[in-house]
Length: 455
Image 1 (tube, rainbow, N blue to C red):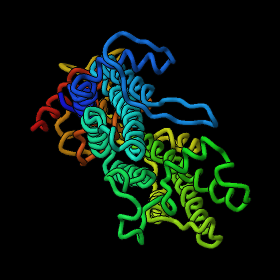
Image 2: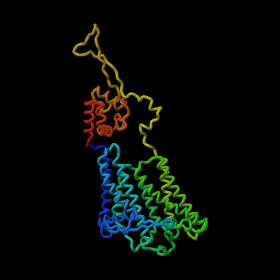
Image 3: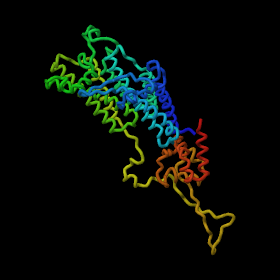
């Protein structure tokens, strides 16, 4: 039987299977130097943990070296090892995804967790490739298995799931993620990516750089490697350079946070957090641009991507503020104030009694007639309730309208005269729980109603 919850579960499972196929393709497609990346995994794991001389499989040749004050670390093997680990975990997660019930939303949570983690790792790898391109364009390789198939497929399926699952809210979160990705691209040395120099871009009069001809990634690398010495002894230069370096870090952090936000339901605290982090990014970027213009630090001025980043941050702050102001949480039964919960609900029906003598003849005891009371339903009715017997109407009213047996969080409220398709489907989704609460006759009527509504 189809229900909304089971439908969402299978929708999540289908998008997950497609994403998992793309992740596996990144490992097994023969596009890594003419072979499979899977054969280079042993060497990548060995290099991740500092072991040299691995003799299993092929050599892992990619490098992304980061300097930290004299110490260096190659992040490329780590990123590939994490990608392989998440892919392996994704295969194992097929079990809880298909075995879990739709009620607990376990499948959807697992799908979001695996896809978001894979997207973050593969995005970091793609960004490392952009940085590597500017340094070594002659030895550059895009690694299309990872950056194209695995990253592209995972990102597409996560976007489809988020929009289908959360509608307009998911679409707005996807837009924030795309704006964040555009911001991260502005940190890379884009002219070098296509083999151009500063002088070749509009004759050098309209250069492209984070500020002047320094890319954001180069600025961050120099800051990590040399600390405040990179900016020189001037306090003005130190403040300006530090603000610029922190803004680069914040742009990267916000992109990762955008991935996480795509996977969680919207909430007031989440939207406030968005405003704070986007606002901090906007303030730091504006402070950097103003100091470079006004103080004329080293004759530098903000480059084109700095202006683009300022515009992106302004748009994100504005949209998040509007969403936060217009946000209205869904009202649940648990959210009703205690003083209101203590008031008894208005009766959905009334019970009256009429005198009815037992058949075939009144029984007499000591000259008195024994009367049998008869309950009569006097509550609201619609095309379904009108099909029930008198006793079934009273049973339905007590159980589902007045909820005399207690709250029913698994069922939507029955709206007399409304479209109650979700109500009837939910009863059968939790058949084992509600079969014991109502009679077989009423259950058969509900079942007949559900079948009549099926296309």
